[in-house]
Every structure is written in C-alpha cells, then in structure tokens.
Length: 449
Image 1 (cartoon, rainbow, N blue to C red):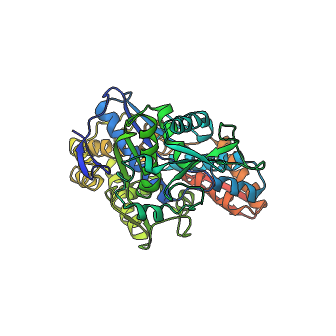
Image 2 (image 1 turned 90 degrees about the vertical axis):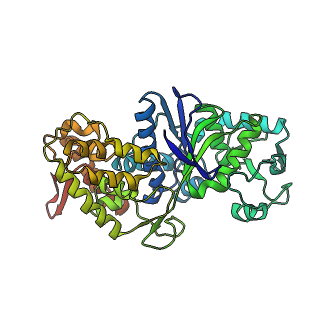
Image 3 (image 1 turned 90 degrees about the horizontal axis):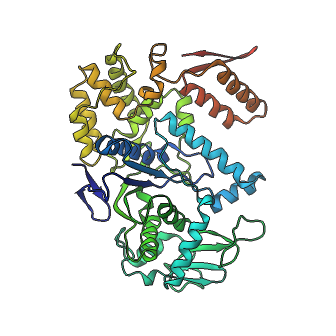
C-alpha cells in the first residue's frame, strides 16, 4: 500500500485513488518568463518519481499526470516589454529551455501539459459560476474572490487570517471587501495581453488558472495535487477555496503534497529574487551529469530542505560512479524490475534516502542494481537511450552529426552576437548529449565523449 503525507491532514495516509483505473495527479509547472533554476526542478524530479511509482503499482496506462505551463503573467509581459518582443517569443523560448533541462534530468513528459492561454474560456466560465453563486464580485474592472464567503478558507495552510493577509504580499486595494480577497480577473490596457469577458477585456489572475486547467483536463476532484512548499499559501489555498465554491463543496484534491526548499550553499532558499541560483545548463557545462543532478535532488526526503552545494554533488558523484561501474556489461535494452526493497521504501511517502540505502545493500547484484537505478529515472538509463548503449557506455543519447553541426553553428552565431548566455546554453545541451567542444583559432571542433 502506498502511503503519502497529506499536507491538508498533516499525516501520512494510505493512498486510495478515486478510481484505480484512472489515477489523476496535477503538479504546478513553470511560469515561463525566465530560465528555471535547479531548485525549480526539485518538484519536477520528485513527482516524476511518484508518477513512475504509481504506474508501477496501478499500471502504465492507469495514471494521468498533468503539469501546466503558465504562459500569461505580468512577469512575462514585463520581460517581453523589456526585450521589445511579443509575449510568445518569451514563453516559447523559456518553455523550450524548461523541457530541455527537464529531459537532461530524466524527467518524463507528462501525459497532459495544459497551457494557461489555451484554457482562458474555462477560466472565464469558472469565474462566471463563482460570481453567480455569490463567491466573487466585480470592482473597478476586476473580479475578486470573496474570502468571507468560504468558511473553510485557510484549512490547507492553517494560518491565522492576519498572517495570511501579510503572507499573500498583495496590494490591499480600497475596492476589496476584505483585505484577503484575491483577484480572479484583472483589466488589461490596450498594450497588454487580454481576452474579452463579461467583466471586460482583461487577463486571469494566477490562482484561477490552475483550478480551471485541473477541472478542464482531469475533472472536479483529483487524487493528488503537488508542488513546492512555497505554493501552499497563497496559491494552493486559493485554489482550494475557489474550486470548492465553484463545484458545490467538492474538494479540488484528496491528497496535497509539497516538497521542501532547495537551499543554495547552506544559505536561504534558492530563488531568482535572491540571485542565488544555478540552472541545469550551467551545472552541465560545469561538468556535472544529468544522472548526478537527479540523484542529488533525490538524496534527501522530498519534504525536507536540501542544501545544494559542491559537497552534495561530490558525494553523489562518488556514490553514482561506484554503482555505474558495478553495472559492467549488463545488457541495458530490457529493464529488470525494480527490487522489492526499493519499491517498499518509495511506497513509504517516497522515502528516497531509504531507497538509496536499499540500493547500496544490493549493489553487488548488477541486474538488480540496474533495475533500481532505472526505476529512479536516471537519464542515462532511460529505455529510449538503450539502443545506443553498445556504442556509448554512459547510455546517453547519441545524436547524429547533422544535429551536432546545427547546434555548433547556433552556438557560433550566439558567440558572434556576444550572446554568452545562449552560447553557454547550447554547450550545456551538447554536453548533456555526450559531446565535447574545443574552441581554437580555426574554429570549434567537437567529439563524442
């Protein structure tokens, strides 16, 4: 029996899906206005392991996993304005980078990846329902959720109302009935992105986006909703409230799961606003592999904070290097099943430290070791890469020469334009694919590592 810690209940519970033939999970994805840092990928990796575990237990086709893309947001509009480009130039760029970085970490594509901009009609429809039921009101071009109309507001985060108001970090506008009321729809000026609605031309607030995308893609009540602990309030609290009010009290999710922060170098949480971040491309360019980065993210229990530094990565490299050497010449085209001890550890609220300890105990058995590491999702052991294992002992994808030359040419163009960030990004992509670059007076040469 899988047991998961439910943030709403504050205890571990036996996981009982609504329908074992259709297990549903939604995880909040990126807002694509800038490149995601390694801390942003902790939930992506954690819930990737969970979806693998659920498919192992219930069947590969019995799980529907959705992770959204927030592609309309004021930060996106600000970035587009700063660069003098259309919004979709920004969102396409950073969504592509996110997916490339996720793939480098062995994160599988979700079954569904709804985009906020394609779910605008569903958001407008939900706002209209909330307004009709007396849970939302219009004020000065905005539509706001009336927190006082929902008696259970605060039940997820369990914070006092005054603390929630301070924690929300939103403007206490004079047109709000209650300082804690939050925006469902906001007006857009002529030069801002907007959609027509009964409340006038505008754009959605952040919280309504996920509620509408969940209802549209997965249903009224889902089994599991996941994300970083920083989303517990206000984002997930507000999702809970508006979804329950729109759906006559039906809960949005039966299980709420939240991963802890990634702390950079022993300091505070890793965040773009603090400037203490590293992205996957930078780490790969520095010589770390996707396997090492993924295993590093899984080295602590997902609910605990994790200090991200050279010491952690060095320990991970030593441990992983030992295991990969022990694999020897085990054929990698067919995946052995994961050892029972590893699965049992993950059944206990995704206890990855216990799973790693179980792997250490069976490391002498190369076949069991392969099954365990592949089950944890190490990118070099992914089945889609197994066809290259005979020629590439690392198991990494073996790109063809034309693909490599295209990327090398793109990097050269970026260097000529002094776009060093793009140059480093392309080098990181090639490094992740096992390609080494050497810059010299005659140009750039490449070789397979």
